[in-house]
Length: 393
Ligand SMILES: *Cc1c(COP(=O)(O)O)cnc(C)c1O
Image (cartoon, rainbow, N blue to C red; front, side, top):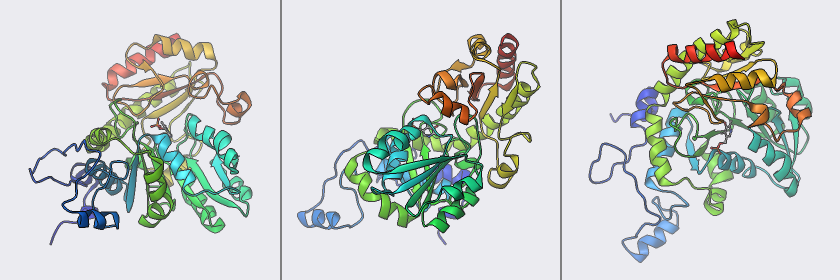
């Protein structure tokens, strides 16, 4: 009997999933840099446009991009995946595919800045209103439901303070309301959290983060059932043009091969760094999903299988946070995350500076907070770098 990739372990899916070899039998996945495809006859073109499987145009699909989509779907355990040019293209399409003028969205308050911009500034232009709630507060989600609520959107763990929402409970509220739940699963990665299995309808990724994991290209993905992808997203993605470049798909396909290895190692090191920060007298508070003192530790135990590589910690005020950053010698000051290189950022003056102060305070983001993405450097070197910077903070 032929092997079914859906029965494979995650490591096997990551390396072998989705391969479609050309007649040359190449081992490494081929990069098809082609916009168009030739048809053997006019009749064949007619059939292809009529829905026969096959490629038509790069905006609709490409063999390399299709390999990336198939591999990520297998890793996620999703029926279908559509790749996009960036994480924001995925978040945007995931929303507009489900929304019409007059609809209502409920979203966790702590969200990636550009996702908040779409909800706060863009969707109201088209008659879509959003209510923000505290992600972990199940009652707040329930109370916010209106007759016209069509989408619930949550990022968990959320940027930047790693707040965790109970995905299963929020999914039940969505189902009862006849709405769809979209989960931005970037921080957890498909290695540590499976929102679809927890009841979500749609999962979105910025593949720019851990999936590339080597700081090179942008990418994004929308995953869900075949039904939701076909009905809500297929036409929008074809006709509005947020297609992933095949070159990026090729890099990200190779990124998927080592995703699990990288994320597991980063998480091992992050756990050690989080403990080190927690024990240091200069830190007022550390939030790490792998620690027992995380405010939503009970929820994490139910839905995540690892703490991930992101740590948030409070050094009291802006001056201390900046002294910490400016003392680092190995870790870079940058706003990206999930990279092989460790990165630290000061969210209130960078990634979250456009968020009004009142809203920043609502999510607990004061000026002492630093967010760190732990990379693949040696744990001893990183510990020494972070300890020295904490001493100086
Ligand atoms: C980075 C990020 C995005 C946006 O992804 P891009 O690839 O930068 O467009 C969306 N959500 C989260 C949680 C992110 O970290």
